[in-house]
Length: 461
Image 1 (cartoon, rainbow, N blue to C red):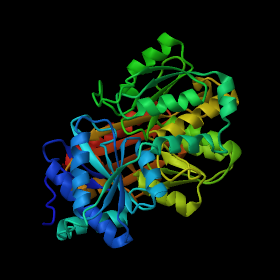
Image 2 (image 1 turned 30 degrees about the horizontal axis):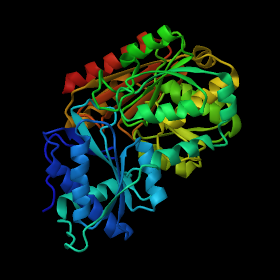
Image 3 (image 1 turned 180 degrees about the vertical axis):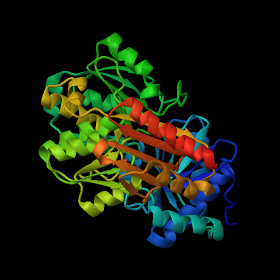
Image 4 (image 1 turned 120 degrees about the horizontal axis):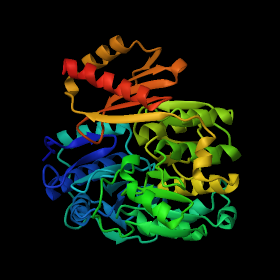
């Protein structure tokens, strides 16, 4: 039977996600996996699909359901176990697989889980592929394999080791230089998948490690999104231990946030800015980021005579634009860094190595590295707003705020370049909310932009 998408299930280029039990059940996960496997077999012709998950408590249950669904349509499953999402995407290419599935809700709280859907390219399904799969999912009863053509299951426990070796071999990094710096690193992996892998990486880079939330048991002690508001504990660890820098990793290990040597959360946008500086120092070239990312990334690109191009929000949207532009580095302002020389996906271990490279090479403390660039204040809010009324909301915002320029490729982005300010309003792809993001040279101006936008939307809701 075709799948009926239940109310409360979020479906987008970020995958399929919802709350465990309602609407997310093993039966639903198995059905979606079967549909994806059959769809990929129809398009690609092969039968191997890679599977990985983060540390969520619901992960083993859903991974078994996904495995059964894939086997039922004749897909051979390569189970990687608990691995970073970027490791899964790299493994898809290594295996010559027709695709992959990540059982992870990324930064969402523990009561959520999701399927991230991967193409044979080792990137997530783009808007076109995602739309085609959604049509297949809701319209087609996937053909099931006979008893003697069911898919097999094998296990690959070496995917992270291969990923690590490729990071260390990058010409963008000087591992000996990082080791010589003798950095003390405080890290918070929030009990996600990142603990063991980040210890591996940091030990290979000669860092002294003090950690919290390193056990990958999925029992998140706080909101797992690595925003500045959630990093008080890591800030205290940095101060208490005298660490040179703090690294905060999200549960599926594709996003990195920084805490400076004083214990101050630096904001996720500076992750991409400092990582891009490390790359552009050696390899100047186009930089791609999304419409919600801070202007500081544009400042960094300009300093190295490199163009900055903006894409709609969503990792795969950035990745596709990077491919089109021949970008040397890119990513998103949520702490996601993409290096095409490694692969076209956000990668927190990679981002960590690049940031440490920048600090070691420049001989800077994190606060000093940030102080080299203009300081902006970014404000992010979520509001409940009927999606069907968004077009009217955009028109009202444009009329009320009178911006110098606008971009409608992803919601509405209004900008005032002369004032170094912008506002981006868009529906979330991972939560049932509308996101309001504003940036300006001072916090009051950014907050005022968000407050005004919220007032305008409230007036027409």
